[in-house]
Amino acid sequence: MTTDQDPSGINGPRKAVAVALAVVAAVFVALAVDAFFFQSAISDEDSFVGRVAPLPKDRAVSTALAIGVVEALEKQGTIEEQLSNALPDELDFLTPVLGGAATQLVFDATRALVETDAFAAIWRLIAASTHRAILAAINDPTISGDLVFDLDAAAEPILERLELAGISIDIEPGTSFGAIVLISEDALDIPRRIARALQTALWVFPVAAAVLLGAAVAIDTDRLRPIQVAGFAVGGAILLNAALLAVVRTTYINSGNTLVDQASRRAVWDALTAGYLQLAALVAVVGVLIGTGAWWYRRSVVRRQRALAV
Image (cartoon, rainbow, N blue to C red; front, side, top):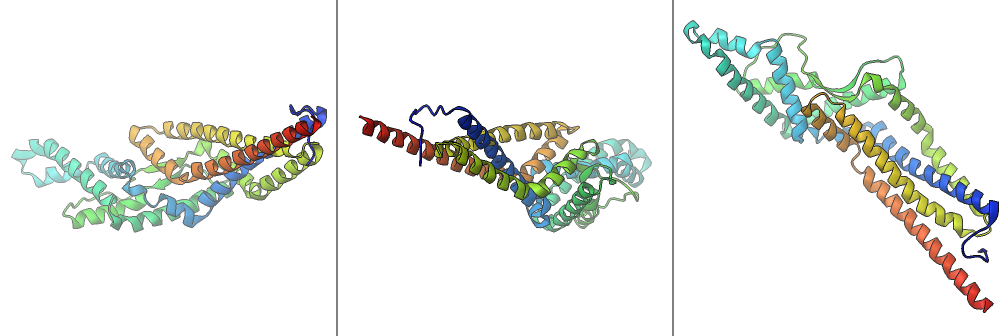
């Protein structure tokens, strides 16, 4: 290894170019982490389904499903209509009171059912169907509409199990039970662009980072300086990346129309990105350790050179 006589590292234009290349290489490393994680988490169906499979046991998601069932029934007047038909005319005034109690009963029973292991297989089928719809919409620009977890697919088995539990409800064909929005239609162009970028980013970013860092090492007379800069810059780039991702998360959650919708969006986001911060932190720590090692070795070389000069 060669090093500058000046421990401050002033080496003119070559130093500036080498440092700039090292910083850009670090940015590519941070982007490569994003590409690797999201490609494996979102593009692979088994990974996607595995990540969202526990969601029904999340209270926010089970509440959203239960509200979807109750609201659909209330819109068509199903519960109160059945009560009104069942009660004698002189007791018809009790319909609103009993209707409220019956609605709460349906809500509680639905939420409890959704959180059971028996519902897990149904949810996995919904998740797999949702994943195929996401890939189709991302790859085909002619497909429009929100990308959602369609709760209609869960409604029929829920109603069947409610009937087995003694809660029989008649619903009109075509009744909608709502959805948990993953990507709204007006924002669909963004994930399409990201998906196209990720298809090449998995190999482009790591290769670009290696080439740029190699060029920086070749240019600088102090071979370890670019490695030191790149190591510390990887930590900084990943920290900045995590901050930007937190902003996107907040924006996505706040785009929900209700508190329940926002809570379910939070649960979905956290499920899909679980493990990202751990992976990013691991890469950042490795980068900082490499940068620290390079810095320590450079300083030790300078000390030896000074000792020899004396």
